[in-house]
Length: 306
Ligand code: CP
Image 1 (tube, protein in one colour):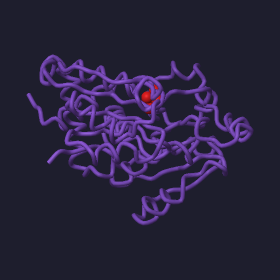
Image 2: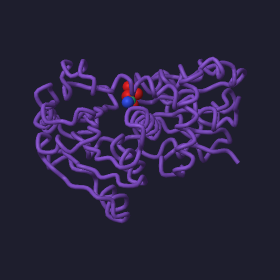
Image 3: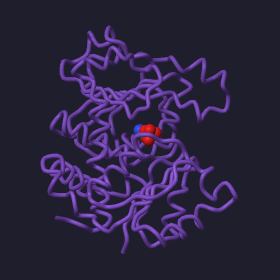
Image 4: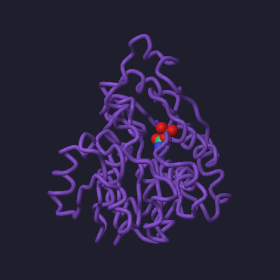
């Protein structure tokens, strides 16, 4: 039976740990994997803008020896003529072995997965989920900290619309001794379903703060996020909230020396470029790790190995 990746919670911890271990082996010896997907094709169906996710999927498939096809905006596909996601997916399965789909509507990749017999990967659906970003985040934390347990994880910014935060909390809350510090304006707190279904129902320790300064000294991981302009109904609210948190070098005086600063990117101005030179800034390394975990995921879903 084919396997998809729609929600990170569909994968067991064992499966996630296997992917992280495979990505680690690929990082150490990429030449050994350069041909494992020869003859296979990845279709990237992106109905919404992307730089990192689409290009890292494409680089991942190319580095595995496979080929790529697809579109990078809905207007250049027959979606512009009114074609449904289901019909598009059924068409694309005639040409490709695996699909990575980003869509502004929550649930669209699941609709595609239900209609085709090739694996479908959710590359971000609305404000819902972004499971391959979460795999990237987990690999980054594992590479930087050497573990995924016993960590205090601060999530800062737009916790309401930030789908990467929702997926990260779902994934990290399964590891032992992980606690969360959720830092956001009142208007952008985590959605109720994340609070109840993931945190409260599983007795995961967390606290909610408005001040990044107050949270900083206890954090092992600081996961900064952009205020998601494209999800706001009202521009005035976006303008009022967009600069709620700006991480600048002076904010890091009270941080742990081995803090790891992550950001799914793109950033707007929530991390000053002056922070990029701080050895604790991991967000461009995180981009690089994203390709390796996607290589591991493509291999798993296509059932190929060395
Ligand atoms: N992190 C992320 O999803 O970036 P893109 O929107 O550029 O793909």
